[in-house]
Length: 273
Image 1 (cartoon, helix red, strand yellow):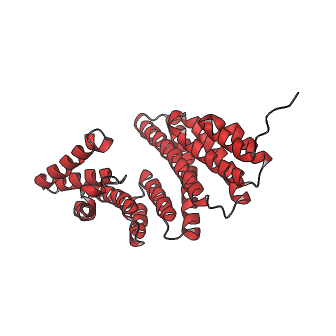
Image 2 (image 1 turned 90 degrees about the vertical axis):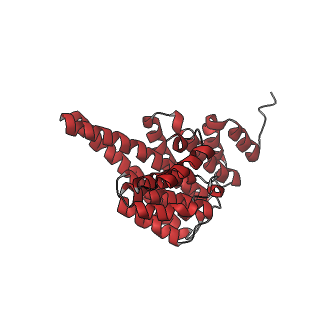
Image 3 (image 1 turned 90 degrees about the horizontal axis):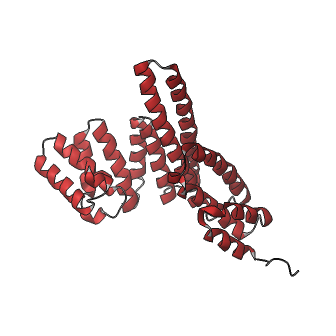
């Protein structure tokens, strides 16, 4: 026979990409056959992206297995391509996936911790301890990415985004003082508008949670204009601005703030709330 069609590394990569989440085996095969090629470098990144894209559709146990897989493949990637131009993107994909796994595990741990304290169930206590441990592992990886980003890409958007993920990890564990200190440091580094809105939205959330309503209002009101509404953090910022205004008795401004939020995003999580 004439044999199978021989595809170039580039064609193999495009074929694997075209398969979406089902292309993992073709991506790994490409990396195995052409380990130092530009296509292998891009295949690594596609694997990281695919692992992240499928998070919502998978069970936590599946995502935990994928977190282990991601760490293994990420180690290969950094060893083979230490100066890759894709490194910043790869770092954030690693951090983002581990944050999501940590958040899920932390929620399960909290639920079981509450149950065992209320009903004195040793089974619930053991489950809580186990999942707190899982969460700690994932959040430690988020911290590791932040350290790498701070060292290799200081004052960059990558470092800012990695820092936000670390701050969010601290929020999940009620480490509000640490999170606020980190967010304040990021703001001091002068992020662009989009990242500034996101950073401020979490800083304002912490101020509100801790009862620092005036500080929340002063911070969040800087980004209350609708021109910031395209940025991811704006909805969160507006919600906690309105809630802080309400607590402080400024009902007119609270109503206006929340009305603007619900008008711009009538069906979003924050707009409905």
